[in-house]
Length: 240
Image (cartoon, rainbow, N blue to C red; front, side, top):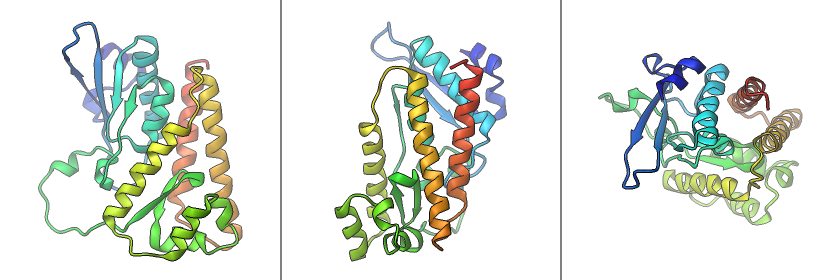
């Protein structure tokens, strides 16, 4: 397994990837639980595009080509891409710190405050601030474009009490719908191309919102651009 790290220039001592091999009851199965270390607990995670492309290559080589069962933990949206490349599953979490993996989470510290509730917006492929961003969009001229489901839009406009527990459940439900609604053709190149189209549409939608005077955090389109670059790099290196 370490040969995969050496070949792809992703090594455990760089604190980039940690792989734990699980020995289950079935002796003929090879199971891998994959963790990718982040530099901090800041959410959304800020990826290095070349490192992420290499993680995609590890998943592709071990999962699709060598038939390992891979579950990518603490992976959020990047984990969804991993399932297009050969991972059998990915995981996100209730708390922001469960949507990325960092050693900082396990180090004792004092202070801190509860994170502001977020809302995953599927057409934007982003988990935005619910009170200061999602509601602004819902009250704009682009509301029906960003929230095509009238029931979802109506619920947002009602502005009912919405706390951390609501945000956690909404994120998990939205990610589950993303996985369930994505066609699985079995052809990696086609699946990636379809997702890249979706990423491009989301980035253009952020730009459209900006022209309408609705300025959301620049970290969201930046994260999507990084994800797109990582996928392009992966596809080029694997000749897809």
